[in-house]
Image 1 (cartoon, rainbow, N blue to C red):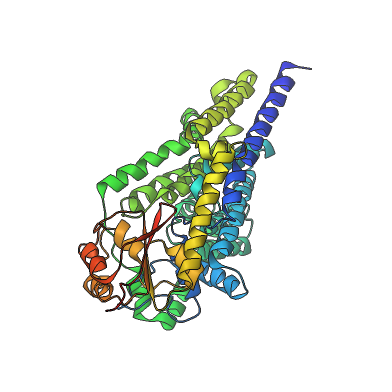
Image 2: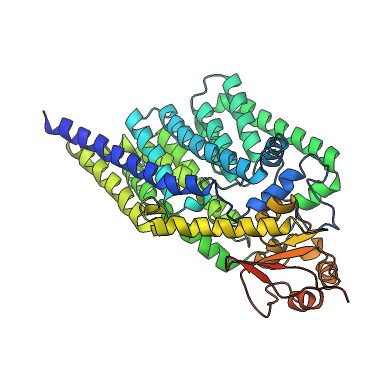
Length: 482
């Protein structure tokens, strides 16, 4: 057996070991998907899913909720919940399927760019490992981001293989559906635009006109359905913060290995015309653009880096077959092994103990199960509540009473909701005990204002001391009337 054959076999074995790591690290998020856990955004999304067919998907100005997302996720999860599913657990399943679909789409894009099957596998594995390592919180999270990325990624996969206008039209429709699921997934659409402009101009017009027509038609329908409320919600002002931007820019480190692999190869062949490397480069630049454009808004979290993670994984795949430009044909597999090793090292650095040891450490499983039981107990306690509820822990209120009447989460974590919400009116309702229950994160006695000045005084006036569940969630019920 030649040394080249041996090194090629070693690369396949190394990738197989990475696949085993991916499967191992998927066990924890899959297990958590079935528990009663309060996780970011899930209750907020579920609230709107339950309103999807009631005419109040985009609330009026006198509501204590806003919805600045497009509607498709809420229509989907709302429809599934009407068939008998819980909107949060249904959403987790859809999100996990979407995560798997992105990995498949990354494979398809790299193959469509004429890379080898092994290179496409390396790209898909790179995406999965970054997600199940440092970004695992979003795997199986009931939130539309994964579904939006899956749709635009499949749109890109169709586009890079497109031979005719009808394929470009299909790609544009998938892209439009993705943007109607979450509007911030701009990386691959921007990459597709510039790639078509330079390399596939005959397909640019059908792709662009179809996407524009689909977007305009969707806007018109939504305006007819929801009127000015749709515009007001979608254009709701965000609070911008340089510290938030800095924190989100630091997320670039999650994709440092594939970005470095692509960058080294791209630099060495910078004078060559290469459609595949160009597409990946455009996607990476667009991923950086998304970070800069949206990353300073308060409340924007780690999902803002997903465009870049997907693009960097595609870049790794197209660079994989071109690595001989850097290493020479005799050493290319050695360099591929170095890349695989670097991915593994970055994974080890970024993965949490809770995720890596979940299968082996019964204490970790017991910890999350105890959290689930505590929230289930709070859910059961809330079922006896009469009247509206105001929640910061939104999911538990959805599970208990199937609704939330005030979004205290945004009031806490996004500093201000500006002119859209009547915070004075909200505090007046709390003072007058108009809510049958109020649920807040954590435990503090006396209660602090958090970022809603006057909250502590309003709670003290209208509600009794907090009942604490699991040390992490507090329930306030009205004081007995004299």
